[in-house]
Length: 204
Image (cartoon, rainbow, N blue to C red):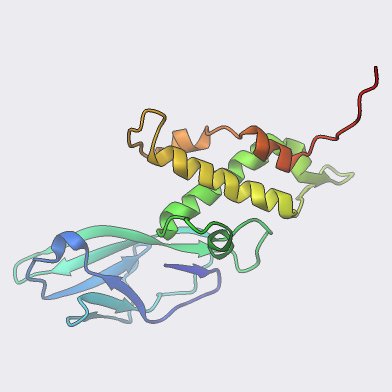
């Protein structure tokens, strides 16, 4: 589930977590970033909570969601997949939608794909250093809008991290620890997309 800054969506559907499917749930609510929406209800037929965001989303990133299931005696809280908020005005780098158009096998989870895109962009900017900005006379730095080759490098790096995180060289499953993702190196092809090498002929 993802939205843009400024959105205040209605009719958001939060399904009952899988581990509670067999439980005798009598009702449920959700908390979005710790706040319980005033407008929400438990749909017993769909086994889901339907809610309206308590306020417009203002900050890009992850918005945590807690699902509170109620029983005849007591309740149980589960952390469920967060809502992803993207800037209403794009900076030119890939969004969830544009990444999926370029990358047919991108992960279905918005949470995972957003994390990969964020980590990939961080790695690209770290390697580009000052080449990713223009600097004014007063020292103010302004990010350079990415061209098509930088956008291709963005999804290629995200895809490389996804593939490396799923299976390592020995064929064993790997997790997505933040440190491992942050330190994932850029390969030569991606570096060439960011800064093409000039092909100057050599004379002997």
